[in-house]
Image 1 (cartoon, rainbow, N blue to C red):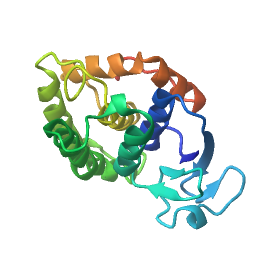
Image 2: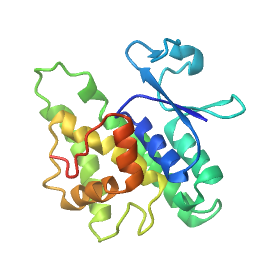
Image 3: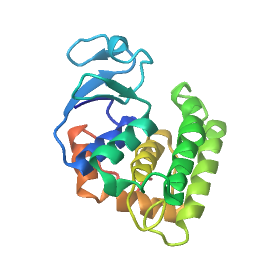
Length: 206
C-alpha cells in the first residue's frame, strides 16, 4: 500500500493507523498547493479531488476520504481499532467520525485562509466551540473518545486538534482535551508517525 499524505494534515490520522496495523506501506509526500507529489507526479491524476489522504491499495485501487480510509484499514488490518460491524458501538464510532468530518474538521477552514496578520478571534470561535464539546465527552474520565479503547476516531481527533498550535488556540481551558492529546501523543505509533513526517511532539498543545 502507498499513503499519499501532506505532513501534519488530516492524513496523519491514516498514517497513525497504518503504524498501529503494523503492515508494510510506502509514504508519498504531496504538496497540496502545487498538487504535485515529491517525485513530480500530478496529484490530480492520482486523486482528482486533490485532497489527502489517498491510499493506493496493492491491487492499484485508490481509496479517498479520511473516514472511509480509516474504517477500511481498521476492518482489514487493525480490528482492535474499531468495533465490529452491526453493533451499537460501531454506530457510535460512525457517529463521532461524521461529527469530526462534517463539523469539527470543517470549522478550521476559515483559519487556513486568513491573512497572516489578520485577527483570528472570530475564526477561532467555531473551532473552540467544537473543542469544548469534545472536552465535555472526555471530562468523565474516559481514556479515549469512545471509552477505554483507542480507535480510529482518536487518530482523527489528534491529527486535527494538533492544528491548535498553528493558530494560537490554547487548550488550557479544556483540561480533559489537553490531557487526552498528551495521552495520544505518548503512543509509540503516534511518535513514530510524527517523526516520519518531520513534525514536532507537542505533548500539551499550548
